[in-house]
Length: 76
Image (tube, rainbow, N blue to C red):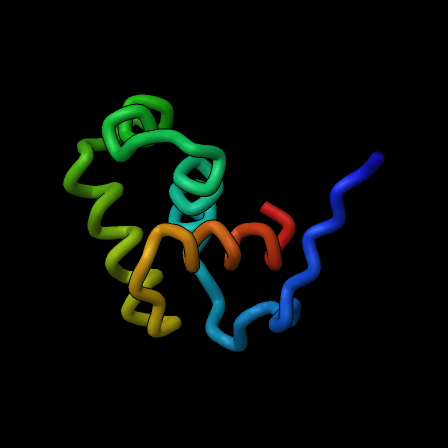
């Protein structure tokens, strides 16, 4: 039995994300913590937090669940 996730908004956002923002988003959506993401990207956890705050501000996202949904819709 396969599980299919159906999302009401499957369009990609109109606002472009920088490559490092996309990379940070990919790590968080995969379940990594800010510290794990920072280590993987060679950054401080504060920089990862800044990337994710920028994404949230650009797209009006408030939760990690919404960030994950965005990552899925972008194919990250």
